[in-house]
Length: 284
Image (tube, rainbow, N blue to C red; front, side, top):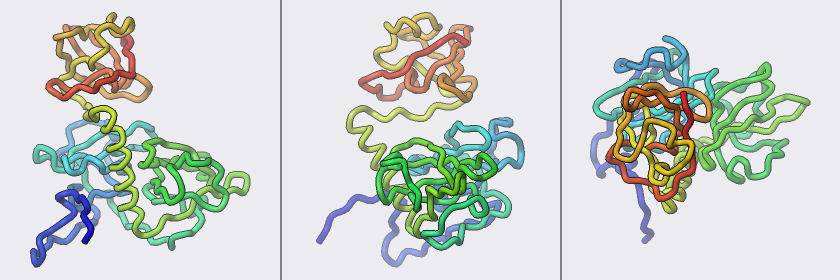
């Protein structure tokens, strides 16, 4: 007697034969197996050079909110920047499951420490949590995206608030995290979708930009003093030629000139425009 909304990929017709989900190393990453914490390497349609840190470097899927569009977000340690990759978009599969990948088997509630902290492990607040609601609140699920300080500290991405933070897993005898429960991946995906929906309620969601995208200035930037110095003007289209780390990661070529912009300053040509602008541009 209850109504609920589901994504198309979450359901099948009763009696329909279902294809098995492949989590075997080497399997392509697509809508059937993409999940938070999945460890990946470059796949058959990879075309981005050493953006992943080099052949064989392992990345962590840190967001699957766009999987319905055939895209996932991956972070490649030691880089702290996440980028979007095709997992079926336009028939391209840029990623495959990393060699030796196995789903974590640690019991839920196990304190995360230097010996069991691994990339892709799903976690929640633990015994010595002291960060308020930085994780999005009790029950929120995060994914370990990098290991630092001799594994006594880990960096965790929290989908419900779309932020990363460092947490203690043994430093000074403190343990901020524990292993999340078995339904953690689905809870994290739901939280990510909710966070995205809350943003969309206020302003249309900006599409992730990548190399080769044709871009224009977002509404409100044409008169910004910093942006006016750059080559993008009203009616001018540029092309993203490189995506870098840092506060202004988009390197754009327009009218023969290169310029660096923050993500929020640009939208894909033809994309519905956000109502409010929040970022600036600078030379580069």
